[in-house]
Amino acid sequence: MKTAVFSLFIASLTAFITSSVFAGGIDNKHNYSTEYVRTLNRNAATDSADAAVYNPAGVLRMKDGFYLNLSAQEAFKDYWHTAAGAEYKSDTPSFIPGLFGLYKQDKWAAYGALSIVAGGGKVEYDQGSATTMAIGNAIIARSGGFYSNIRNQRLEADSIYFGYTIGGAYEVNDRVSLSLGLRYVDAGKEARGSVTVSGLAPDMTAQMDYEQAADGWGGIVGLNLSPASDINIGIRYETRTKLDFETRLKRDDTGILADGAKQRHDLPALFGLGVAYNIRPDIMIEADFTYYLNENADWNGVENKVDNGYDLGICIEYLFSPRFKGSLGYIYTRTGINPDDMTPEAPELDAHTIGGGFCYEAARNLNLNFGILRAFYNEDTTSSGMTLNKKVLIISMGIQYKFF
Image (cartoon, rainbow, N blue to C red; front, side, top):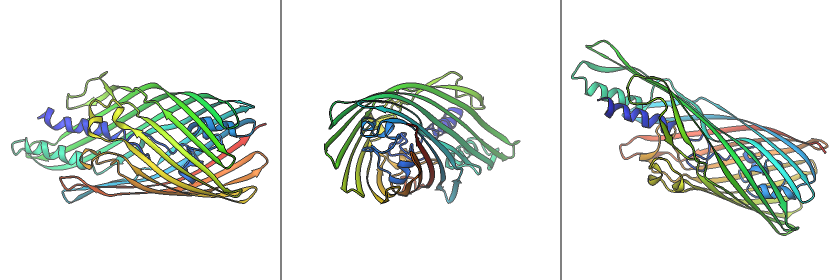
């Protein structure tokens, strides 16, 4: 009974703590900065230090100097699913920081960044979920009539992947620049769950509590093209990051998990392309395409059940005055996973997202950014009739200062 029942528990928890709060890929997160939140399209960016992670070769289009950029996002997450007539919910918010530094001089630039590259933050199902319900029902079915009710159930998890990026860029000529960077990923996950059943026999509670950690390196190559004064093209490729998660077991009533066991779950590679066009000196539009190479990651065979995902978007920025500009953006997200293979507690749904905000030059060399986005996810249904849904609202504020 243990192997049949609790393997489901383990598989669900492991998948649950890898899903991203807001992303185009199944794992990859893309909302690193406030500038992204207010535009949703940054692959051709050349106006702020966060370009170090979206269009690193494009930082050569910025003025000489040292820039420091800080972003803070609050993600309000509502996840819910319905199974066997019962609805299960989680609404725990997440905080997402971002820090970007850039030094540019003549034809050279060096940059660094701290960003959250994957992870779903914290999610709490205080009344359980479809997974804990299935486990409880399986225990009851195999008890020979000694158990008949699920008294209590709970499931919670937390995950965060810190990305530390360093790199440099070189301007070949007025129209072409190149960049090369490295990113170190430090990933951590933890999960806890319990199910209590009751009946003729004394109550029985099955509990699990464990952590997983992994780290790895990936490369980032960039190319920026400026074929005309009013057109800019940003191209970026991020290699996959090999991640071998090691388990640290705190408690396991099932006897299934092994302390020190390893599980492969890479952060997928991605390709980003952006085209920005200044229609007039006060109006700029940008169109982006980001492709997530899920199929080429090693996920212990799970990658064979998914397709590659993508983001496709467009934004417009309008300069109201020399010190104030507003923006509005849209992206469509295709994750590339079948609903039967999604994690019910954090479903990787396709989405339409709208974002907007403004940038205000509060003082010389000091810019303030504000952004807000809302993701409208497409509800989906599994072959067993379980409905999956979620919604995410992100509010972000940022500040950038150019020191010299």
